[in-house]
Structures are given as structure tokens and as C-alpha cells.
Length: 135
Length: 135
DNA sequence: ATAAACCTTGGAGTATGGTCTAAGGTCAAC
DNA sequence: GTTGACCTTAGACCATACTCCAAGGTTTAT
Ligand SMILES: [Zn+2]
Ligand SMILES: [Zn+2]
Ligand SMILES: [Zn+2]
Ligand SMILES: [Zn+2]
Image 1 (tube, helix red, strand yellow):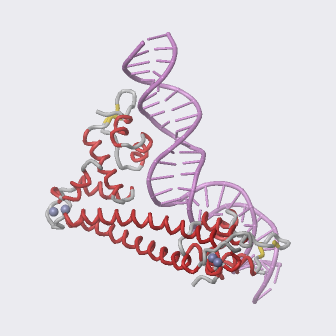
Image 2 (image 1 turned 60 degrees about the vertical axis):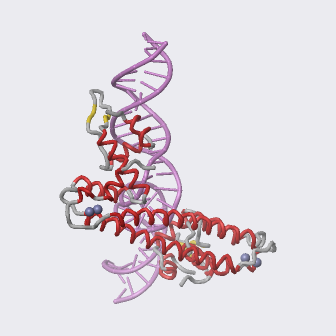
Image 3 (image 1 turned 90 degrees about the vertical axis):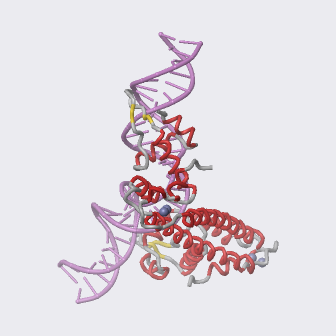
């Protein structure tokens, strides 16, 4: 069994992060020793690595919560359920991407219109454009 | 001169938002009446529209703060200064875009590997992949 | 036996961008 | 002269994902 510092080192997160995850219902140690120290099993460590992998592919903690519920009840869930979950996330990411691309385009239009010269910016098209009534 | 509710309606934000912006140094009314009511001039209203335009192209309030400083001292600033600011933001947006695209790709790899069938998910490749040691 | 290194808890603080509430003052209309 | 719409303030609250702190208990090594 691992103490919190051991698992933290293994998982490359802080002890605080593990306690934070616990407070939010993501991972709890299977045991405590006499002194109240958290003791994590291999299964616990595995669960933590699941959380970290899921974070790395862009899931929020809330979504990971739902994913973990899918995982622990995977006998009752189908591949369809799980794939749907991932596909919904892909849709979300696509929306964010579209937003960012729209923003990038606006910024580039602003940048391209500006002469970039060293004279005073009293005539700067960027400042002018930002001063116009928003659509 | 406009009262806060008038300006809020004009700018399509809440009164609270205007007070919030004031607290954070973005916009202050040029006057107050006897009763302490905020009174906004046309210049103030113009500044608010600047803020909203800047938000719409993706600047954070912090960045808008800096942009406003550029704007009020635009006699001493050059187009170069301002264009640089926008270009730095474009770089940031590009980084975010790259992150999101990396995430999307990971999610799509996960999704593609899953059979999506209706049988129990005990063999689901998504859950398996997430359970592996993160790189 | 004592110091370092570890563990516990609860709660506050960080950044972002607001929203909402309470308790009260002001103003215009009817 | 009172109702309703407006205004004021300070401060609490929302989500997100932690991080840090204080005050104390435990374990380990020398
Ligand atoms: Zn220029
Ligand atoms: Zn310019
Ligand atoms: Zn399957
Ligand atoms: Zn599957």
C-alpha cells in the first residue's frame, strides 16, 4: 500500500491534488492506517492514472467523474454508451476550435490593416476598429 | 449624460457588469450626480464599446486594460506598439488552437478504436486506453 | 531523544468574468 | 403621498482546478 506522498510521486501530481480529487469524489484510498494516513492500493493507483490520462486528452474533472462511473459499471454499459460520451466531447472541442478560429481571423484582419510604422498611433486602424460599435 | 441603466441597455451588458468593469479599472463614469448616481458621457460610452469590441475578438479583461492604456496614450505610442500587441495575442491563440487540435486528435483516435456496439463494455478500447500509464 | 520528513484537517487564496443579494436611498408618476 | 422603477454599497456566490497555510500528530533515522 502506498502513502499519499508515494502515490503523488508515482503519478507526478501533488499530494494536495490527490486530496483535492478525493474531496471531489474522484479517488479515495481503500484504507487508512491507525494514524489516519491514507493508504492506496494498486487499484487506487490505477484509477489515478486513469484520471491523469483522461485529463491529458482534454476531459474536465467533471467529465472524468462521469467517465469513472462508466468504467466502474462497465458490465452494465455498452461500447455505444462510452463512444457516445467521447463523441459528445469531440463536438464540444470542435465548437471551441471554431470559436478560436473566428477570433484568430478577426485578430489577423486587425493586424493586417495596421501599418505597423513607428509614427504616433493617432491614426491606427486597430484602435479605430475596436472603437466602432460592436455588431 | 447616461445613467448606468441607460448605458447598460445601450451596450447590452448588465449594470453589474459595468460596475464590475469599474472595480477593475476599465471604465469609470466621468461624473456623479448629487445622489451619487453614476453619469456617463459619450466618451465613456465610447470606451465601453471599445471594451466590448475587444472582448468579442478574444481579448481578456486584463489585455483590454493594456489596450486601453495604449489607446489613451496613443499620441506617444506607435502603430508598431499596437500591432505587436495584437500579434502577440495571435500567437497565444495559435497555441490554444494547437492544444485543442492535439486533444481533438487524441479523442478521435479513442473514438475510432471503439466498436460502438451494444454489448457490455468490458472490452472497450476507450476504457483500456485511458487506463494505461500516461506517457 | 530529538530532528527531519512525513502525515492529518479545515479553510483561505489564486485567476477569470461575472451574477446575485441585502439593506437602503432617490425619483417620477399618479 | 405612496408605489414602482431606478440607484447605491459591500460582500457572497458560481464554476474550474488547484495551491498554500496553520496547527498539530506520526514515523524514521541518527
Ligand atoms: Zn499606422
Ligand atoms: Zn496601426
Ligand atoms: Zn466494443
Ligand atoms: Zn468501446
